[in-house]
Image 1 (cartoon, rainbow, N blue to C red):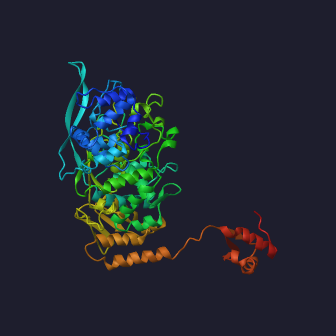
Image 2 (image 1 turned 90 degrees about the vertical axis):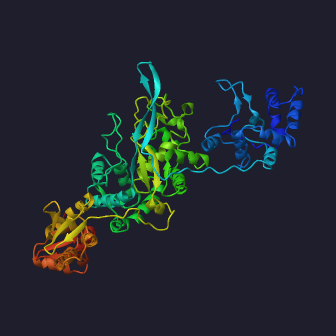
Length: 613
């Protein structure tokens, strides 16, 4: 008898449980005993009959008649904290449900198996639990399966129309798996996005704080190795995969307080300015921790086909921080350095009840049409539709983008055909753009960011292009070409005179300083990438630029006041009442700061003059 969501009060004894059964139910239980003895027909006698056959060693004999799965159901229940059987957890751990008996196609005319003798409304009576504990061994905990190596292909199973037989028939094809190591890319992409923001070239919506098409293109062009998918992949022209990493980065830096929305585009905060020269692994770890708590985005919104999230369905959605905390714990429970199938992770989460709810009312979420496509209809809002897709988004779009996990994936088209029974999904090539994620692996950066390791040692040493800084103020790349982010950074400070050579220029560098760039940031990059000390001429030039950039300070706007003659200007500029609010500018002019204009007019009237507006 499956576990009931409306859990009744635990039953203290088998006798009490039998009292709640009808005579017909008791008769079916009495039939379970292999005995030639005549069975009674009255309720009190039936209860006594059943109890007699469960007394003493007879209970152990009955338990031995159960098959392996049925014995496991007994063990899981008697050793649980509350004594309830959980079918989802059991099926995830053992692969299928135990044999509860038979029924007709509509669930009626139930004939219980021997297992039904011990369960009543999903629970075992307390006295039976105590007796079972005397001889039933404690069940082994659920274990996560991992592997050292990836398979080269993924078997994609689906159904298609066979014109010869005129029937839908199963078919399969093998799809190459694309493994991507994210650790090095994340370290590069973090600095690239920060420099793009520092250059004033990343705009987001002032309402949603999400990047538009132009911003996605700008970020995507700087990503190391590009985004996970190219939209040219696949054959569905109406449902494109879209950006993943390029979408995540603008949100991640905002959630981590590295950037904030200015008048027209994102601007680096003080924390973001410091992050440009800070160790990348520390910043990435902070971004992950900040993302776990941010309310900037509910990842469910990225599952485009699920509608109603901004309408009635929004009220039923659970807090995103609670969902992410469960996923974070699930990752921490995984072994580092081992490939894990995503479906295996989902199985383990359900087997140990490390799960979460996405919504309290799935009826308000729907596909295509709120009347026919509700996710509350027929129980189709199950774990594989909401929780699994939410996990896939967090893993693929945020954990992988930050470099915590290496990923192995296939195109999402048909990768998870578990939504076919949902109304309104006939035209969907995939349920979510993340459906193609099939394996992941926690890398050294992920172990550090998740708190599984105290320090970080990159699995692949980072190789960077060398810069040769010449005495004539030229900068040349040596060996590998510059990454797009570093090239964009140099373009802010110097003129590019060839494919691999830049020339430091006073006007260009001062222009960069006026735009908010730091000369010290340029000097740090040159020193870090150069294989020899900077030439004296370059050091002196940069020092002179720092001096020139700090000699003048903008004190804000001011109003210029013209006086009738130099004597009046001198009088007002030196009077004790007006002197704090103005400065003499030439012979006949006064400069009044904009924020002091009101006080200047008040003091001016006391001197005996007025200034018409």
